[in-house]
Image (tube, rainbow, N blue to C red; front, side, top):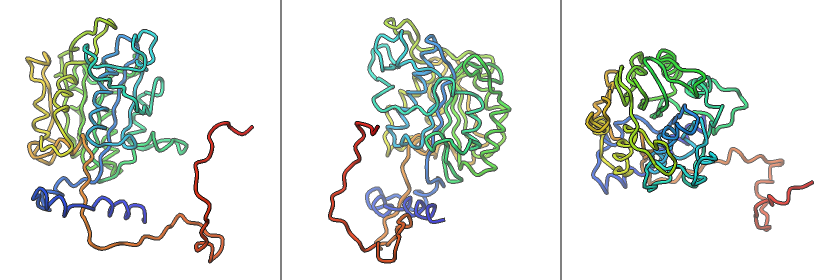
Length: 342
């Protein structure tokens, strides 16, 4: 119980400062009800001609990191490594624009599931937490009942399914049941589900769990279209809906007051060609009063306390009663990594 309590108090620290600077009331400051943010970002397509799907997911990944969600709270699943593909004339880069303005691969991308690890089974296991004990923390969604979770998916889909690597598919019923498991196991407070694929609306039609807000790039019976080609690589570099969603997100800052209601209006039909669909009936709050950073950012609700709290070091193991008083004058240093001992 010590760790959750410490985490709870840590999440409460500088409200007084915010109130003094912005005049935000306590009721308004804590009305979201969540204390932490997670993101599960999934590209389900491999092969070079699906370059745009990798660019899609990396674009959202970049925005999440820029707005404050750390890599430790992002599960990134990428089915193919376009940055190191032999066809890529600019190795170690992925661009979402023909002008090569933004390298969304960046210098510090952390892919948690790559290549053939991106499967329906692994995706469901990540959401529901039903992973083998040997799975490292970096591959686990360690959310709780106070977590707001962003789930973004992109790839090739149809009416009621999304393909994974042209080998298998996840149905809208399986996805709905996975979210219900998350709700029953108290693995989320609110979910924002975002999907860019053909007939994307069908993937959230079977949802029945509370506190889920969803948006899709196309209605049932419609294709979700690409935006533009980069002639230097010969393929499309981004899909239309994600392009305009990214254009909107680039105007958002961690302290922004832009709302989910505004985001749901991104990419009208004259831009997307397809019709963006949304579902709000399962979501309990007014989307026009929900901050965009409640899902895309990680701004902690904290309160500044005037009192100091002394915490015991529970991880300190002593061999004798007096060993905690022994201090060494020897300076600390990092262990040598190279050369490795024989």
